[in-house]
Image 1 (cartoon, each protein chain N blue to C red):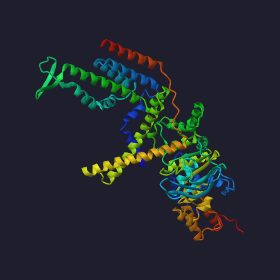
Image 2: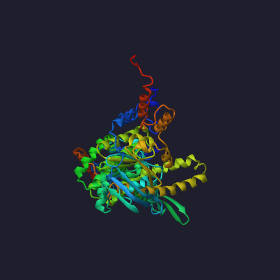
Image 3: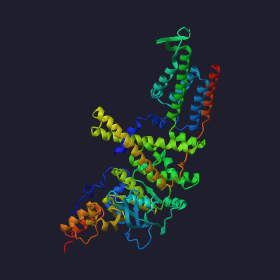
Image 4: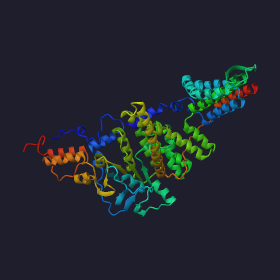
Amino acid sequence: MSSIDPTHTHAPGIAPSPGLQDPEEFVAARSNGDQLAAREPVDSKTDGSPGVLAAESVTFAYPDGTVALHDLSLTLPQGRRVAILGANGCGKTTLFLNFNGILRPSAGTIVHNGEPIQYDREALRDLRRRVGLVFQDPDSQLFAASVRQDISFGPLNLGWSEEHARARVEQIIVDTNLTELAERPTHMLSYGQKKRVAIAGVLVMEPEVIIADEPTAGLDPETTGRVLNLLDSLHHAGRSIVISTHDVELALAWADHVIVMHRGHLLAEGPPDVVLADDPLLREAGLLQPIVVDAYRQFCAAGLLPSSEAVPRTVSDLTALLVRHAAPRTPPNSPPD
Amino acid sequence: MAASALSKEAMHPFPIDMYAYQNRLRDAHPAEKMLFAGLTILICLIASSPLVALLAIGIVTVAVVRVAGIPLRAFWYFVRLPAGFILIGVLTLAITSVDPANPATLLALPIGPWHVGVMESSLARAVQVASVSFSCVASMLALALTTPMVDITDQLRKWRVPQLFIELMVLMYRFIFVFIETAQAMYIAQNARLGYSNWRRSLQSVGMLAANLYLRSQTRASALFTALTARGYSGELRVLTAQPTWSRRNLVLIAGVESVLLLAAIATW
């Protein structure tokens, strides 16, 4: 029973391969569950606190009449790792552009730190510093000829002094491991490198919340690991991190709070092990149940596990459950009575 | 990832960029290189002398090959690129209507009642224009092959060149590569579906590619605008510029070489 090797039961969406250098930490954290288990249990309810950002009855229609958000109300809790899940075209990107003040709701309000956001020039500048938006396609975000120059764009828009901006840019280049790429022209970077530069370009503005649109889409497992490590380190520094993704395995293992959207509506929000264990809900949203949850359910059905346990979030959580429940039946070296 | 594979492909049409980032003068002050190229072009244009132009080509070649360490073959490859334009251009200068009785006529072909051919003066003019053109091309290339675009725009900023002009340069430069990647991806996709199987299909496919590229670039532009706005863009693309250091040795070298050229120009006046 206890011989299930976690390294052979990875979900396809995560697929860490052994022998990676940098993301090993990330992979290890996911496959043995140490970090996830060590995390203090977070109460995913927002306790009526305003959260860092919130949408209140937001409706948004594009000029061509497409209604992307329908009377949407949700709260992004402060200091958490939030994953917004939903099929293509469910309104995630539109919501993000509303949070950053680039789009303005047709009806309803966006609330930032408890205050409805204002759309005058000064307020927007402040909002865009505090709410950093990383776009899905780094090619639409990077414009400058060199990595260092591109990163320096945001700080100079904030009106920081040149010395301050320069110091921040250098610090971020070091923090995000971009030192070797700093002089490179942006068009010579690989897709994954562009993605990291795009994140650095947002990070340098010292936002309170970082919203990343599909940060891992199209990335190989190694680069996915790097990007998630980077986001995790930002979270440890006290920031709220919001990502959008289709990857239910990633959301289950990584997030503290998940939000499921469907056709511009909020379908569900809550702790990942609750929301992502709701198969009918996920199907309605055009998603599939995470493989770990599926396996857990099947083990429960087969009588290997009692269904009273909390849903495991990683393969190693599941393995631990199996080990725990298998142990009493075959006690190793039980003392003779 | 297709995008990353393509970005390497996209470098091939632009090896100039590769040399600009990997030559021995990469870290020299961009103003020094711009000064060298600019002064050489200026003297060649003012002197308008084939001898001065040839001397300039020689000096520039030595600078590019010996000092910057760029292979001679690569340098000549780029110098030859505009040769077609220049030669066709000067051909019309060399060939004029001539008077066959004039002793200065080198070649005369009767066409009806007229004579078309080459005269000493027209040939001299053609040689002059061609040599001066090549010297300017070589000087410009010396700059392009040793100085990344980002250094040039940085320097132009310091020289207070109008912001609009620099922003256009920056965006054009960036989007050349995005454009090529997009076009290449579309071309491969079309080719994979036999879009270029015959002449007729090829013409249709190229037409569709061009139309699509236009639409894509519109979408790109609006996506870029959105992304820049998210980072606080308010009408000005400001970025930090590098702070290169001047080299006394380089300045002395440039002064020496340009003086020689200037003296040659005065001598051939």
